[in-house]
Image 1 (spheres, rainbow, N blue to C red):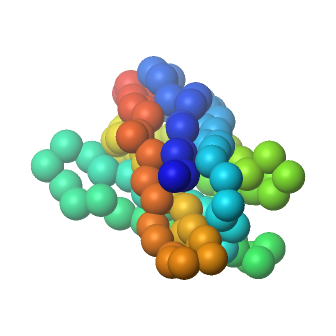
Image 2: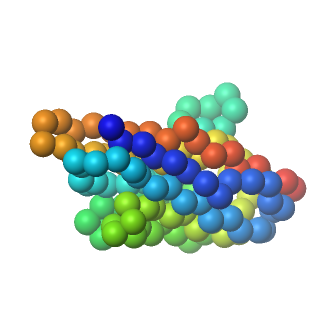
Length: 118
């Protein structure tokens, strides 16, 4: 069984920075891709950034402000968020595309709250 655990959320003023981390734990799996999604109150969950095979993909709304990185040895993905805006306020969820010898699946963390005050 694979578990994803996020950390690093919190309250920050507009223009500030936060760094989110997410570590995958378990055994007998490989990770094909990792990423971050977010869900603001009353809105659908949306992609923030993903990374796979050394390539990164970003939502237009965060390009130039957020940077995703991954430490494969630690099964950890990071999201450096700079120049934060109140509209970045949301629950941020870590995602990993996991493969085992028997199946592939999407794994999700429980989320970490980011609040940006104006």
